[in-house]
Length: 126
View (spheres, rainbow, N blue to C red):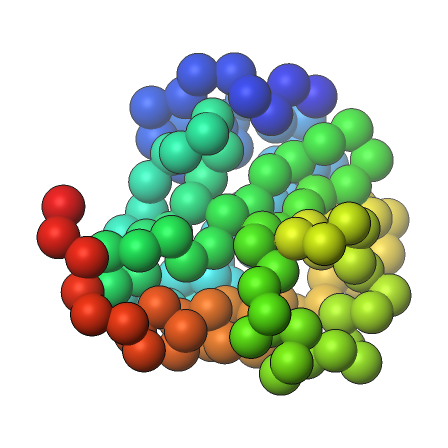
């Protein structure tokens, strides 16, 4: 599944995903939008992202067998170490299988922690 294909919108990105991935990624998108309703939806680095307070907040991407959330910051690790441990893949990535139940509470908390981090700093101008 090509994650780095050029897409203009998150809707375009989702349309390009296989049905199984599209369903899960659409649910992830909805969780992000609900947890951070003021976040600006963008495509950056070829994947869906959400700017918060003018800063990078959350990204997600779909792959053949899993989807990922980024970035796992020091603040996320400090606030959620136990919850994210089974999903960490490298230093800055959370990796989730399409075949497992979507961890909605974990994703929501991840977004809220990233949202809080973004709002601790001065607003970044466009």
